[in-house]
Image (cartoon, rainbow over all chains, first blue to last red; front, side, top):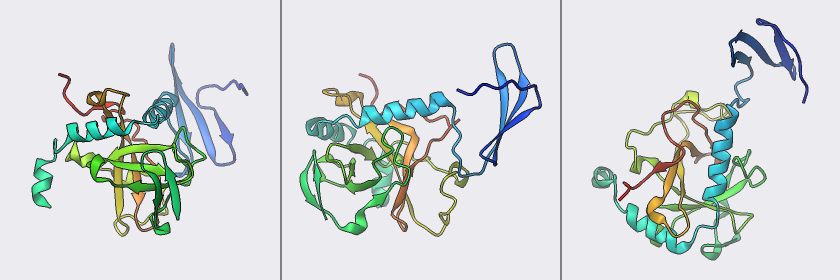
Length: 86
Length: 143
């Protein structure tokens, strides 16, 4: 991993169009500002990890019987109103 | 085309039903082609089946079944600026996790919905960072 030292207010540039700036430092945290093109996805790592983990969990060869049971359990829960509109 | 599915065996699907997920989804970056399967026995759920991997399928449902007020705003979309919002019809699904043998403990991931542009047959998993929605929302009240 590349490690750089920056002062508050200083930045680094990644791939010409992503700018990461140190905005403020605290005791145990720093505030970072990021300028990047809209199509660049920026996520806190723990959020990304949680979604990835959940995706893997949900893809685990769910049993047909469990799906059918779950479908029955969910039934028309929460949809009473919407059903009437259809 | 014919596809193989673990849940429903071999199925014949129209090519125009295939949804491309250019970025895959987190955890499955390489799998990019899916199809939405609807079966009576799993309704109101659908199966979001990977076309190229019989063993990869997600149980999904319409989030409005649980949160009638569930909405996404254009600013939630970072990677889809090519989509013409308002002109193209979008569908939205949330992935359900059903623990083995414990369907009553199923949860839904409202923080990261699968959004499909029906016109373009293109989809993505949006991550609603900072939203109040949970990625492990229990769908049934604990008994």
